[in-house]
Amino acid sequence: MRILFTIFLLVVALFAGEAKKVVFDFKSGDIKTFERVVFKSVEAHTTHYAGQLEEFKAVFIIHGDAYKFFLKELSGTPYAADAVVARRAEFARRLKDLVENYDVTFEVCSFGMNSRKLPFDQLYPFVTPIFSATSGLIEWQEKGYAYIMVP
Image (cartoon, rainbow, N blue to C red; front, top):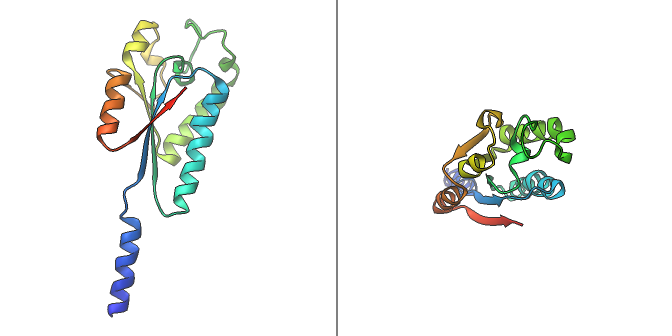
């Protein structure tokens, strides 16, 4: 009986560890950076930590030139002629997959959206407007998320 109880405690201890948590300060408008950081990095780190029986949680604070990746429609925006237009449907599908299957959180800076006159109703439904990028970064770091700046 003691052996079973000891095994039970070891299993509980393995799964009781706190998740690896990161908040990305994401402002890049570069497609290669977007794909590398948002898709490849999240998938790679989730797999890496799962192999160690740990959870990986990622949050992206979107601002700067990154808005274009999170809008359903780009016509009438400063990004209407951008190369991202041709890949918008693919990116939308892959972003939704990250939210549904990797529990990724996307938050967008309302200040930047307003200053660029970007329509909030064109954000994907899984993207949450927040007061500002700065406030979002502060709040996630206060919750223990490591800060990563994406140049």
